[in-house]
Length: 326
Ligand SMILES: [Zn+2]
Image (tube, rainbow, N blue to C red; front, side, top):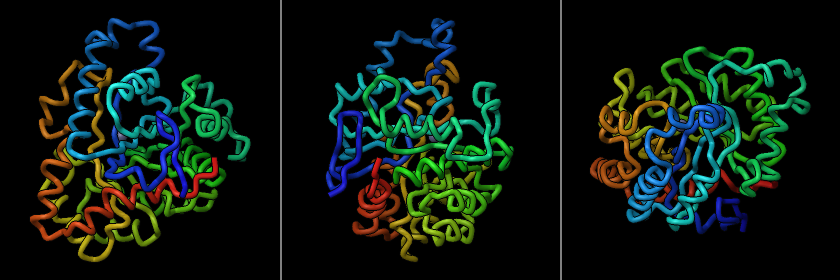
């Protein structure tokens, strides 16, 4: 039986259980934190640990036993924080490598560009996180998170996709791509990833649930990848409503796509993107328990059976981590 590395060490895939495929426990910009701590931590750190621990414990109490944290480089990883929370909550936390940017790269990365993804500093960063661990935490990343958004697939972005594919191909680690599905870039992203060595069955086209375009969603899944219905609770004005997302997932389940659907929220337990509670005020449903409390009952009301729910919550997420060679 294959295992996957978690914050607390290796776990057998059949012990992962119900899994949220895309969350962020914390997002703290390292240089900002170092030089402007009073602007970064708007609450005392201990208080933030308590708040995030309570949120993770609440979802653990609903029976969720694994969370994939998709916080990559540039998105504000803090392994000390994640480890501290995991000491307080009995849950499997899988963490990520990758880089979170829609185009911009700082000089230390931009000036080191090379046409050969094998030699690229980005690939080396991803492989280091996967094989040695993130920083000195001793925790190995088991996922690569990258992003495209309104800027489209720019030169920098294509480089990032190639290097992510290269590192994934060498290690078997899955890739999650943040996307802006209104632009329907999923198939182009898949083409680049496949060309540079990624196995498309180990790719999550993230935030796909922001669209209700069934043909687009089917095209992603027919190519083998998982469509991330991973922003439940975050119903941004230019995206789909909760009801549309529920209807879409129910339709796709009835067509046999449950094994290529993952459910999650994309919550940020704490971030330096705004004052504490700014997101909760605007999006009161954007909490870690929303899938458990509202979405799964909503899917059942629409006729989605236990078998499909088990597939989306347990076996499809576990399959992403099958065959990691490191
Ligand atoms: Zn995210």
